[in-house]
Length: 148
Ligand SMILES: Nc1ncnc2c1ncn2[C@@H]1O[C@H](COP(=O)(O)OP(=O)(O)OP(=O)(O)O)[C@@H](O)[C@H]1O
Image (cartoon, rainbow, N blue to C red; front, side, top):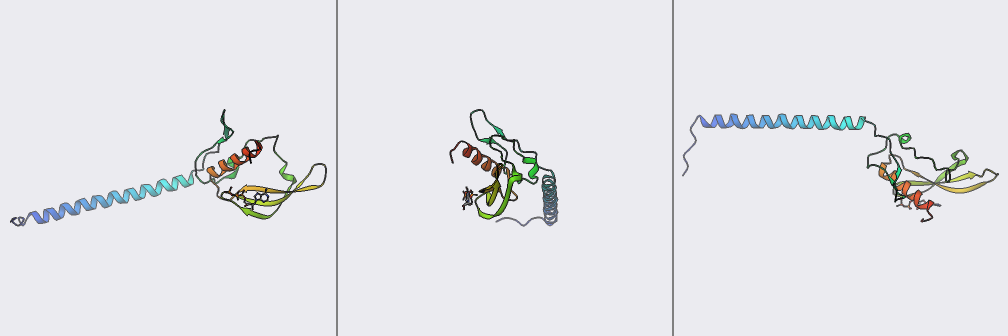
């Protein structure tokens, strides 16, 4: 049978427990504040421009992570004169459909010699991330190779 704790020990134990709990509360508060500040800083810091490179042995582009792209101008792709069309000649129409990362519009392309051709224009959805851009560029590259 255990003997009861001496009368003085109980207040000391309670005080120690209160001290430990207070310290834990302070640590938790500091952690919450630092996490909140880090998140705010991450949101305020604009993402770096996307680098799209072609690896020596691969036609797939090398681009970054899955952060949302907030500034579409920061991810302008290198021009490819062999495939690039003058987008001033494109007249966008209504939406045809949507896939996982892109949406497709009907459009008319004014042919330089005169007349126009109906075309489909695929573009990234709003709030796309770098992985979506990578998917689109990969699809473009496959199309150039005649693989799609
Ligand atoms: N060249 C095209 N001509 C007419 N309609 C098209 C054309 N390309 C796409 N579409 C329409 O737009 C829709 C979305 O196409 P999109 O390529 O974005 O996605 P998906 O191929 O269906 O799916 P995922 O995003 O998974 O590749 C298609 O389901 C189709 O209805």
